[in-house]
Image (cartoon, rainbow, N blue to C red; front, side, top):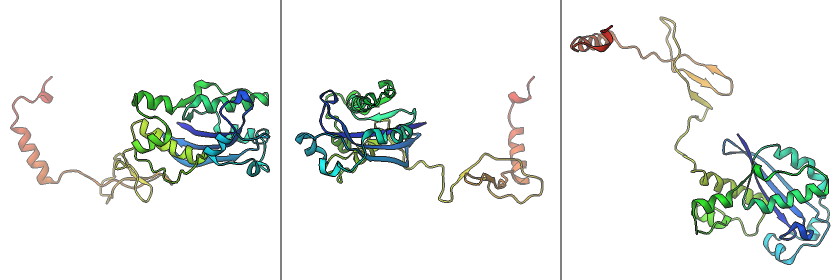
Length: 239
């Protein structure tokens, strides 16, 4: 299952007032685990940035003046997110800005139904508690000490960790893999007389090594048979 954790920074708080996206950060999760694939874009908004917004993210018009406009990065952005669910904190905010940009380009809008709002998840799970990203990082002991200002990719990375915790968290002690990328496999028949070692499937090369036999020794088999003979009227001998 592929999901995209997404965050944006903007020139202001409302796209209906003409405010625009200036930064996009997105990273890929596969089965709720980061894959290392990400997308980070700065965008020239072709307008001034509100002082309040600049105080939050620290991005200036001068810094963004030589960056591409949204129309130039739209295809790259849409290709990266594909048709997969979008994990967003306060989804209506980011989705509103993204759809405002797409509408300007006369491109299909993203349906709200494909967004997963971690703000709503947090409020449902911890009613009455603070649910902003910093508060959730503190609750789940996610290190956000490097977050001096809001940044789209930094926030997406923190949100990915928070999202996993909201889903129930990881079990770091549970691992089916080993350092050499192998996993235990189910047993398989071993030819008579073969000196078999443990059966291991190499998940990179898909090679199977022979299984270690677990057949009882003659003494163990005799002890087992003697024990079974003591059972009265065993069910497996009926009918």
